[in-house]
Length: 350
Ligand code: CP3
Image 1 (spheres, rainbow, N blue to C red):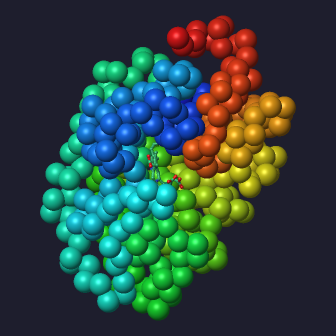
Image 2: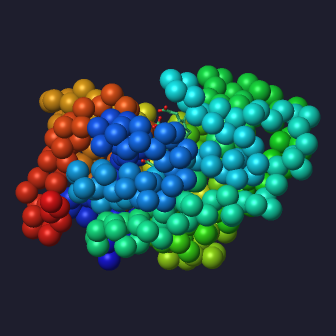
């Protein structure tokens, strides 16, 4: 079995498998080149040959253990009929929904049709991803996706979304329920097209007090994980409730996920003692440390391996790699992780 899949299924590997959130992106010159040829970021996501090529770029360069589908979490609202565009220097923009919005304006009728290019990318990756590299699918968790749908893009405080949830939990719950339904189907279709494991990104889970977290982050995510596991029992699910703090413990016990992705603020010894007995852990190198490089990077990489590497562990970052990261710092990180045992393991890549 492929190393990343083995680790996600609870095996301890030395060295641990490694991939990086946002591993394909603007820090790579080959990505910037293709992106400028494609026109827009969304064109890149929705053109299978190009999305395939971008997915493979970091695999060729670094020999990572996981190839994550190149796409975005916001293609889901787009496939429900909400207008989406990306503004240079700003990020994603959507025509915002509000509390009075008629949810029937959103339609799942053409949902899978709109996402066909993404399934096509996964089908192509079946043939082009190297043999021992795991193909990862992904989606955004309902709360994080709903927040972009309501705010109309990125937000500092998510007040509009939180106010809606507090004032009209039934109405807000309908939006969350819709997202639970379509996201489960979306992930199941990704598996049918070739994804071997999937990650559910709840990037803004940490904004909630505990009750809100359970109701709007953990519970909808658990419902999705349950559906995916029922249809695809062999496919591990990685859950990333970023910022969950001590509530990571409830996620380990109750989300149904096989692995939890830790943000950089989670203390390693605490995670080892309280989470790793239940699930595989993934994470959590600070992306700023990767950007800094040098001795700080070597030291943090070694510490992560020595504390979490004695149990089921996947080396990753605590959040996505930043676009200003020098690509050679990733080489340095890989050297520290793989050390000499990479050869013994037969896991060397050209
Ligand atoms: O990990 C990978 O390499 C796979 C591809 C991937 C992207 N976005 C590509 C992308 C994945 C898994 C995502 C997830 C995603 N998208 C999340 C959850 C993870 C997280 O980072 O918290 C969120 C919140 C989004 C929404 C989104 N997409 C934002 C906020 C932005 C702008 C941020 C920025 O850096 O400009 C995007 C754009 C985006 N998604 C880019 C990439 C490579 C940059 C697009 C470009 O201009 O080329």
